[in-house]
Length: 288
Ligand code: PDD
Image 1: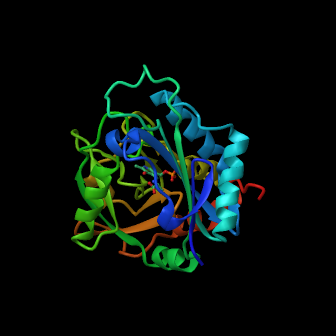
Image 2: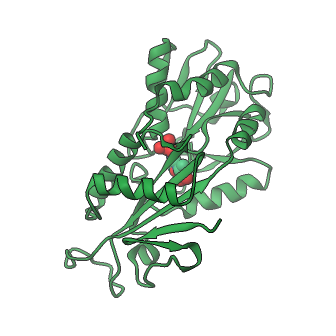
């Protein structure tokens, strides 16, 4: 089956789905995005993802490309045309195209560029990865000072993941100048200490407020586990009982090794696996 991509009002075959050469997303990284899980054909946590999209647009003063309800229709139609049952849907909004120019406030009428891509991802494969757990590699966080905005400026994340791959790790954990973990290259970072307390860094401009993170906090509160939102060091993480990452694509993913150090007994932790299996009982499941 050929893949269909939504671009500015049209559903196009993948090979024909292009945007303008002078799109500001392409020239300046002047674009924001969202990735939402699709499970059994339903969008997961759509409301929170759309709220974050709106916030990212607002922070960068990018005009909304259409109403929330029209956007919801584009998401569903892209999922439908690609027959995605389990996978993800990607939405990107750039400020639009114009002859290259750093300033943008003089071009209020620029039409934002909207792209939507849906992709099937095997749930069995993701569950198998979670059953084995992943390794992560720590490295300096070289990103900018507004990591709370979900922009497409992902080169530091991409480089970090490539260097993680060199040692067989699936994710990079980024360390700030004070030696604390900010987050993963494309996920939030969590540990569970020896007393069973969950620890994840508090929200600030240094990290993305993950939707999966927020929903997992709902679950943690519901089951009555202890949670502290504060920075932790990589040494603390290596001495933790359990560790994991959260993201819309990996949900709750156990971390079994950080650099050369196995976490706990080197297998996915019990609490982490329970949180993963219960996650969808609290996440919002949208109507199709
Ligand atoms: N990444 N932190 C960063 C830097 C991220 O890129 C992501 C998500 C997260 C987790 O956010 P959420 O739980 O809302 O997915 C945290 C997506 C999945 C990506 O870029 O593919």
